Image (tube, helix red, strand yellow):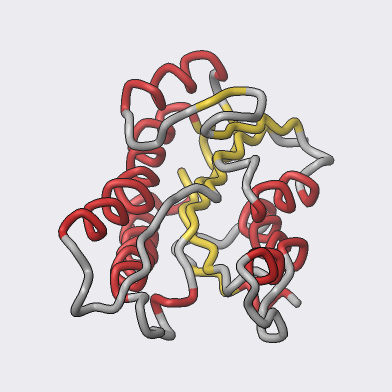
Length: 200
């Protein structure tokens, strides 16, 4: 059994990941709900969280807000939201959280399929996702087995698509998405961007 802190535990994917990891000692963290609360844009908030939690075997993040807009219409504030929250927020988790992960443990961040497969309105999202994938690969290259660093790359989640009134035929359920996170935590792989479609 591992001690795992799950950031973003109250979201659609986060709840499914919590179910997938229920055999472990799981600390569920949300922005407003969960066992603890954190603002990933605030380094003080993250430091306070880990000071309370202490050492862990793994950190899993399913957190991060991004802005969708046609590239010609993307505003500075929309870019800044995506960069400050999903990118820098998760890098904050890595930078502060790594000090609390036991030797040989892991940090799993969330990127997304738009890094490889762009869509209209998703330029800011593609930017952030690709940056996270590249960071994990580079960090793993330096850290080796001392700390595994991976990303999970979700597709559009069926439940989210349905809530938005979209056709969810091409979506992947949150429960199926969670399988990739479980693999990231339990495997010995590092520097990978795990595509959730590979775990269906």
